[in-house]
Amino acid sequence: MTSYAIPIWPVPSVPVAGRRDRFPVRHVYCIGRNYAAHAREMGGDPEREPPFFFTKPAYSVVPGGGPIAYPPRTADLHHEIEMVVAIGVAGAAIPPERAREHIFGYCVGIDLTRRDLQNQMRERKRPWDVGKSFAMAAPIGAVHPVAGVGHPRAGAIRFAVNGETRQSGDLANMIWSVEDLLAELSTLYTLAPGDLIFTGTPAGVGALVPGDRCEGAIEGLGTLAIEITPPGL
Ligand code: MN
Image (cartoon, rainbow, N blue to C red; front, side, top):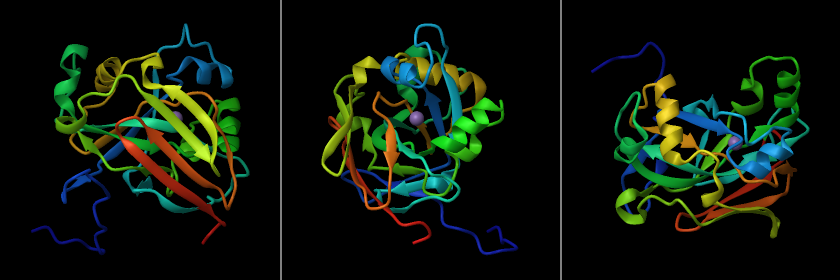
């Protein structure tokens, strides 16, 4: 057994629906602007832009949601509700027609974003990392294995803040299908078991403030609730 020079941290993991086993998280990939209306609200052109990707570290996962302290150095924390793909089988340069063989399951995720920092970096043509990669930036609901839910490709995806619906869309309106996303992403990175892939958010992203109680839901994949708490608590 390997011994370590400092205490080793626990493997980040998320629950698996209906099982005691957990899904260990290796890395988190995300796609930008995968629903036309959201691409437009971010100033893009959904017709012409190929998919692009960014990442979050495994430690940013918040399994099952719950309280989330308002993160530092931002005054514009945004919610993005997204379907997340959980990878179960490794692969590189995966053809779209074989993408499903690599998928363990699906879950609800929230791509929390320090929008002000992301926009500042974007304007300066610098990396987005400070806007997207930070502690607690990726609340994730229970993973639903393919054996139970199949491959959801249509169905309501919504996000409500304090009971008021902010985002409402349908999985059928993705610009790039899950299969096409996996094919493209796997030409850039070798996908491995434990990888999570955020598949983009519908329109209606907006700011959260301490005290907000939020619930995301995707048809067939259940709900994910978070509460924004004051900074540092
Ligand atoms: Mn996103």
